[in-house]
Length: 138
Length: 138
DNA sequence: CGCCACATTGGACTTTGTCCAAGTAAGGGG
DNA sequence: CCCCTTACTTGGACAAAGTCCAATGTGGCG
Image (tube, rainbow over all chains, first blue to last red; front, side, top):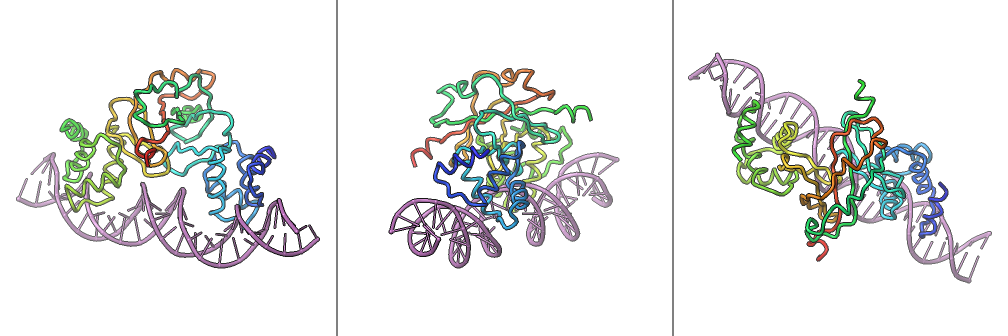
């Protein structure tokens, strides 16, 4: 995990207590947190950290490609610390749980030139929806 | 398009001027409007219609399965009147515009049993991201 | 054609996120 | 080791999208 801090320093990040805390929160959680959840956990380690800083830092981590933004439901964005292994998401339609999955195939290759309408397509996101074992049992 | 109104009446909808207007707006547009855009167009036809009614009506259309909600990011939800033909979306990262696309391949088939974690997977949503010709030019 | 359950309204409220001017501190140069 | 520059942080105001609610209106059954 100090890998992450190393990489960030290498990219010219000024290393502040606030950024360290946000990075630690993301690195410690292997779930997908909302910005407010990140803020809540960050406050537990550094009480005076502000909401604006958490938003800024998350935004920077996203543009550096260290963290992914995921909008699976219509509520808050979630932040996915697992940016270095490409993957997609499996979402439970009942309880909202999210799992990472690694399907075969490459959906980008499945979009022919004739279906790109002049867009410069750079990325694809796949969201599988279903019912998780817990909810199916209940 | 009166198909839509017929189906809705058949499902016990009380047919009000407001609902008719919202249905007409959606039916007339083959793009994906935000709730506010639907409201703006509805006001043009029925000046006293309220925002709350547009939100209510869109919500009802979604739960009846006549319209799809598309949440591509944390901007406004968009409403996709084309609920009866399966397709995926191409989203502009800058301006949020959405196009329907029909890629090859079947992503559901690309998710092996070992990656389903006991979920009953029923649906898959694919979102391609890029920059549209307009935004690329600007 | 009258009634009442269902619809509509507008405004207050909530949630999520952005912006900004002023204060603070990281870390390289001396 | 200290200072200076400059990037970073802060809190509060603001904005956008959506929800809620009590009062009012009305579609359409009987």
